[in-house]
Image (cartoon, rainbow, N blue to C red; front, side, top):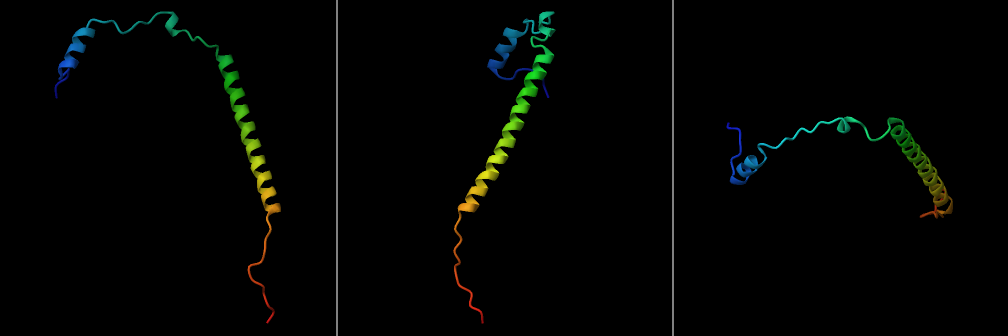
Length: 83
């Protein structure tokens, strides 16, 4: 199995970028732009908001089920006769 470009366009791209430097590690690239404490605070706030939303959704669902069940009118489909 050969390694390298097989098609014409791939060969042209290999020729074009063969001398291009791709590693550009400098001091600024390795330093985080966001403070870790700020990121943790934002993630904690987001998780707290999501948990609150889930709890409210659960409570609202429960209330809606209660309203539907109280407003339902059950009518017997057949009368039972004592034999």
